[in-house]
Image 1 (tube, rainbow, N blue to C red):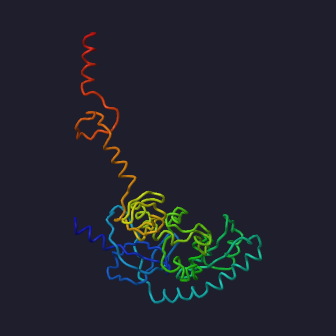
Image 2 (image 1 turned 135 degrees about the horizontal axis):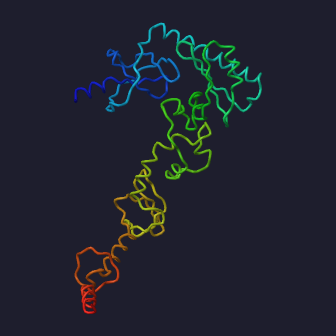
Image 3 (image 1 turned 90 degrees about the vertical axis):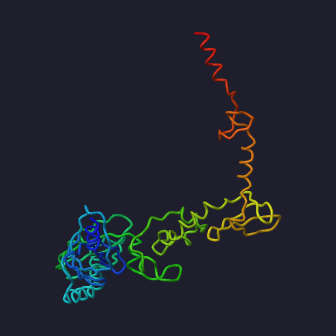
Length: 320
């Protein structure tokens, strides 16, 4: 059974269709000589595509069915792909001119045109604030081009990924260099990291929250759980003080002690409020044994006589 599992795990290849794109998995059992970096032809939901093998992975779910790799890409396929890729700039220009001629697409931005490897499928990528009907333009494109035409609306982050360029940090955008997928991002992530909620500070070039807000979010959350919150009373090597700010990445807090500010590490802090609460609880009587010696662990509260239940039962027995 183990040998069969290992053999199945070796038969799945990760294939990428774009330079910075998702990985899709295919069964390559018919091509055991396949290596990382090879180009292959596969059948997808959008027709035949040529992709590059990025690696191999093991899959333990035997019930899942993976499409097989159709064949290795030939030198002719690679030349064809380069030829059609070179036509894409002129193609998107024709699309924009036709959209302007037809009218009604002022709020639509036609971003790119993409051929598949053999030129049989032509996809136009466009963005718009609302869902847009492009059936008229699709009909005109079918008259101009012999390939199968597809019009696909994409979001602002996908637009930024396609266009590339530099981000607000001064380096190439994450989405166009290494991000293969977009993670959900919320304002809560900026708050947890103490980042100003000024739109210019948290908004990317695409007009959405910056992808980098998610990078250190979990580390901040974990660090804050171990540190006291603002305005907490704490004991420090400098005396009793009040927490003014939390410094998660330093595993420390800024404390105000005797008209002075100190950065104190977590291991040097004493949680005074919690210790006082525990001391108060320890002085309260046991709910079962009253003020006497007790190790039963009962919660503090109103003490009950240990034989109260027996007296009640005796009275009931007398009446009966």
